[in-house]
Amino acid sequence: MDGFDLKPDRKPRAKASASAVFWNLMTVVVLLSTICLAAYFVTIYNHPTSPLNPFQPQALPTVFATITPTITPIQLEPTWTATLTLEPSATRTSAPTWTLLPALITPTITDTPSASDTPLPGPTETPLPSQTVGSSLVKTSITYQAASSIHPGTGCDWLGVGGKVLDSSGQGLPFQSIQVGGFLNGAKQGPHITLSGSASAYGPGGYEVVLGNQTIASSQSMWIQLFNDKGTMLTDRIYFDTYTDCSKNLVMIVFSLTK
Image (tube, rainbow, N blue to C red; front, side, top):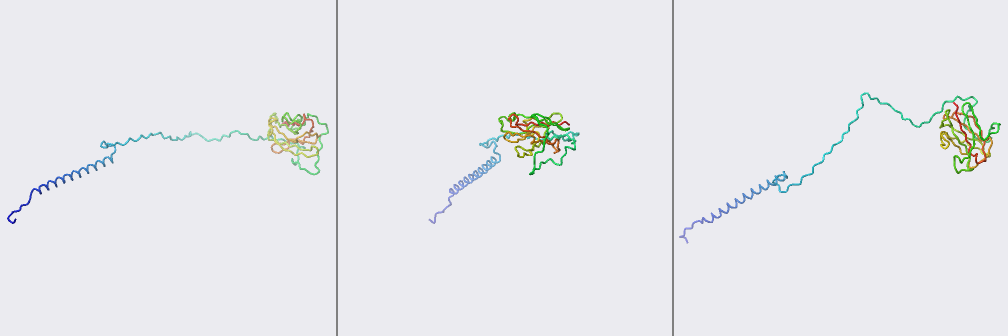
């Protein structure tokens, strides 16, 4: 074997070289493909609506724009001047100022009860079912009628005084003070105080004072007196009768101012 000249085998090297070139080429192709694919995905990611994207995203709905209202302040005219307008309202109407006679002025209008309180004597004349008492300021009309004319169904189970206060033009005058007091069957009554205009059943300026739930006869032991809205006395105590007759259990007293 020493006589043989061994030479290197060239063919296997050639095969190995061709194989290496092939795999190198394949590596380059894969790298280029990877780069292209990455560039493709980056392009699709940044521009999803690109024609290269086979899966186009759905178009977003168009936002409907509405007109936003704006407030336009009202400009006042250069010559506009603010004025205060008072709306008329129902207010208490003061009665005219009366000039009272010295004989009509008393130091107080409060009836103070005492152990010896007895009815004051009334006029000496016999009262009639209808009478008129007056002064220079107020005329007073006294009549009698059945209470059922104002309060249906009461019959004889009611006794009281009602009426109204009229001004000099015959119109109802509200907010005038009426006091009713005296004695019935020996029992002291009141004084009961009410205002004109508080009982609409008697018309404008109407008033009412209930004295009991049964008819009682009395002679000049009950009285009524009128004051204006300032507490000034307009009449003296005016005495009246009451009856057991059911057709006269409502004493109608109308005050008419003459000035």
